Image 1: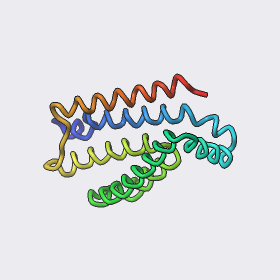
Image 2: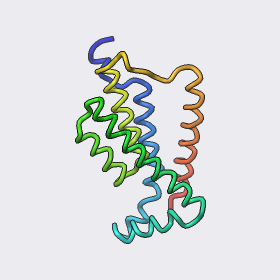
Image 3: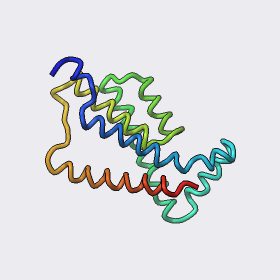
Image 4: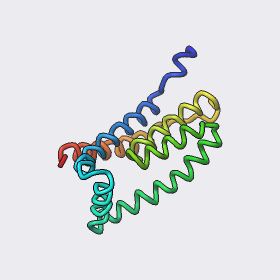
Length: 153
């Protein structure tokens, strides 16, 4: 493999970037009605609606606790690998201001690429039956994003 080919993205990294794009499309399809209210009123309305039902409260708490745990891991892992603080804070702010479903897959792609290029002995990729679980998760994500895109307010 040539040096320039090695520096490109590999399938796992492309998949993570694609998941970030899917996350962005699926979340932002719903956000424009809130933004039309103005930043502060739209934000207040958004958070009121995230806890409007037991199911929405469940998923909100689930995502927020997951996000907090991921931020602990992301900053620690990023520092361990030598990923610059600017990148880490960029992913963190993108999570808060855009969507964690965009920022986290982009961080994971960045992490995977960094390990592959700088620590090849530590590099790993899904194999065999792993792809069944990944395929199911990707199909569910695609279905959710597709639903969101078909139900734009």
